[in-house]
Length: 348
Ligand SMILES: Cc1cc2nc3c(=O)[nH]c(=O)nc-3n(C[C@H](O)[C@H](O)[C@H](O)COP(=O)(O)OP(=O)(O)OC[C@H]3O[C@@H](n4cnc5c(N)ncnc54)[C@H](O)[C@@H]3O)c2cc1C
Image (cartoon, rainbow, N blue to C red; front, side):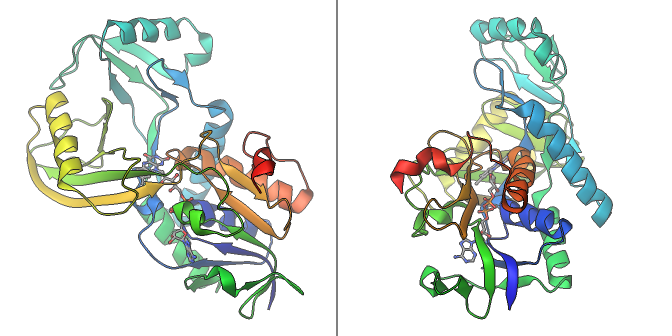
């Protein structure tokens, strides 16, 4: 069977890219081994202004409108909300942070994102003040990926299978089993470190753990950011996370991370009582050395393409890069130099 693109991986990257290419009338097949992936674990948080110095995420003015527009289209198509916009309260840690934050308010480029600094907020412990941020949100990745999977199954373009790299034949023409794609697009998340054609790329994987719980009372409805974060899902359910572990790259949950996350939440939201912990998950972020995605065709095998490396910011970054990669593959439009894997040409 001849097709345009064989996509490997139905995480957020593979799913949104398959959607994009199908919208552009391309013949696509998407394959996934159906394991719990980073996208299903992720909180989907979108936070345009981050870090100790309150700096806008790279290219956020471009990435955010594309992401909002993209998720809006998916919401209309599947008739359910995926992108939940909620203000964020960032708890300032010390005077230095307060000064850095005040400085940002003088910069007009930040006016859309930063609302005000408030001295306190009911039930929340803060020492020097709280920054109220706008345009912050979270993506409901689980219902989104499940809707997209059902859609691919309905179109008869989804295969549940584990791809073994040695099954991929490059000559006389590209082939996997009975499928002959023009190109294979690898979207395997952290498992790309096993990919024989792309494993030279400098991934710097980071494990994270997340807790989902119900509270014994109604919870406050802002996203909280205090080094870790608290995301209200409804009047009583919330998620809190995520831990950050560069040493133990596995998907095992640990009592140490659980305790650390619950202790740090207790410090900032002491009146919160936890009725039940309904889920405790671990996943691996496909983070990269220069914190920029890995997108583009292999320098020696142009039939092999990678779409990966979205690190801790998949929800914000993937929609814009989907459209860029589709333009590159279909119309030969150059990729952005900061995400194009040709910046690492010497490693291949
Ligand atoms: C704890 C945690 C918290 C996070 N929080 C956020 C957040 O708040 N905001 C945010 O934007 N991002 C967050 N992220 C990051 C986000 O999850 C990633 O950026 C994004 O999900 C990566 O998507 P992906 O499709 O590249 O990878 P994945 O979601 O891992 O998908 C890869 C898919 O490929 C499949 N696959 C791999 N190899 C094969 C093979 N050989 N054969 C068949 N299938 C294969 C895998 O099973 C998987 O389904 C978080 C991640 C973690 C782990």
